[in-house]
Image 1: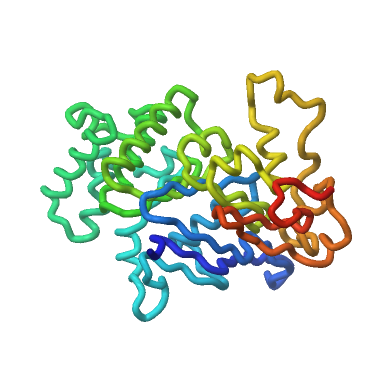
Image 2: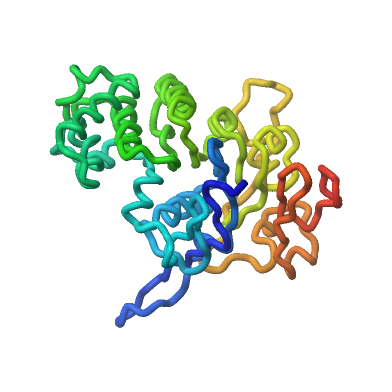
Length: 329
């Protein structure tokens, strides 16, 4: 059975320009040879430190920025080929919810028109588009009679994000990308929005890509998780397996840094020291080696391959024994 979304070799390097003639002086390697799949009906979580390439990956999937290399196929149709989905059709199938709920909405439009805007742009008659907006307001837990004619500045952050979810669903997409969609909300509102997303996924048969730096949230909502570091995938697989027994040293460090009330999880020192290297000039070989306590000479010479096991987990690390859950170091 083919996946809903198949990504192969996704690569994006951004030029750094300067000087009198504004020439390209360097390239930021934001996403470098990233491949993964998303099955219909699942939630894929993407985690990593700031600057690891999570949001750039989302923007590439939505064709908000052009690819340098790689292919993206939606339901078997390669985006960008002659038989591909057009950009218009792609946006009917895939939608995105951003972190900044206020900046995502037009301050001059009442929320009903913000929700109806997409269907109107795709040719739906105005009465039908507004009727769909009213239904979606109710679906995201907002009374249409109270909220349809309000403007974004009259709403709380949680209410605005519910509007953004409704707007993303207005074209009846099959896949929704959520880029830090709950990170700006306080914890009680965050929990409400997360529960709403889970309910909508089940009711509307949706597929999610959920991007976040909050590992607890990703564990709650995801079926599989993809860990990125400096534009590369370092570990990828079922969320329960990775959280229960992480194999890559970077994944282990991220999970050790998770907030916890359990005194047994307290550490005497930071699980991961230093900052990620400059993506303009990433380390040779394994990009994590400059912060890895187990790095050896091979890590500087050869980039580790993302190697999968029979259980659907893949890890990119030279220091793992075949079939082992532990580093050799």
